[in-house]
Amino acid sequence: MTPTPAPEVLRAPLVVEFPFTRSLGPVQSAFLTGLRERTVLGARTGDGRVLVPPVEYDPVTAAELRDLVEVAEFGTVTTWAWNPAPRPNQPLPTPFAWVLVRLDGADTALLHALDAPGPEAVRTGQRVRVRWAAERTGAITDIACFEPYEDGPGECLGGEGPEARATPHNGAFDDPVTGIVAAARLEYSYSPGRAQTRYLAALADRRMTGERCPSCRKVYVPPRGACPTCGVATGEQVECGPHGTVTTYCIVNIKAKNLDIEVPYVYAHIALDGADLALHGRIAGIPYDQVRMGLRVEPVWAEGGRYPDHYRPTGEPDADYDTYKELL
Image (tube, one colour):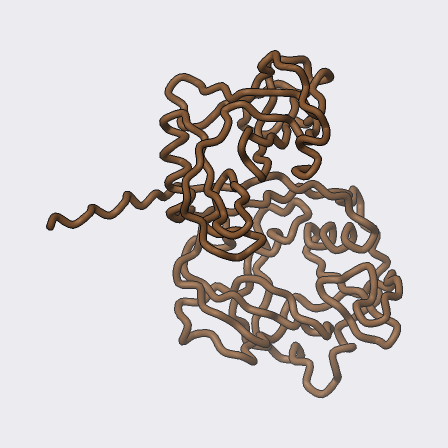
């Protein structure tokens, strides 16, 4: 008997990326501006602890913190992990150690990179110092990395205590940094299971399919391979739609990077005929302010597309609320 060939294993590289923009309060503004000026600041709590990086509120008492102090640019490794294969945009292009460093004068540790030739050159208790970036803009990357450092005469804390290097600072600098933009990025490879593989294959043929739960008889589109209510496997294939009903929607007014769609536009939850779960899709072919709950729509495929590009009105009368209220 000829064995059945194994189904193709689908994989797709995915990247989720967006710029995270935030304004800075007085504490974070002073800390980042200080880095630009080669000064490391911490915040002193009511019980005398010095937190580096500084925070605006005491993590123990929730008291507001405004007492800033300057700490040393050298300190001690408290723990570490070797990174043999740096990823893009990490602090160093060559293998390095992630380290937690308690700077002299601080009671907490700062996470950063340590430039070392190999893991044998890193140890807990090792003395290190800041290597400043050549160009500094007021960001954590103004610390290019840490580097091994042997204390010179008079530079070891000895028995003087951490407070010896925590000196008061007013946090005032010229041209303070008031906001930052950080790129949040996640790269991963996605491989769908059997249920979604069948669903994607049907979409390539311009068919909308789901799977029915053998217990509650609900039809899920897209299929998940198991009923989220009953917890049993789903295997029965059911063809749905292609028409559907808008259940809820939102108007998008912010243009996404690399997305060639003019704003405003509408993104909606759409309950396909015969389905018991709404999927989401973009609504086009109608002014955004005329989209409404109950609007009857159908999918539109772009030439050569493997999935619907958007949904458009069918011209049918709006669906009665009672027919889709359980799918909101």
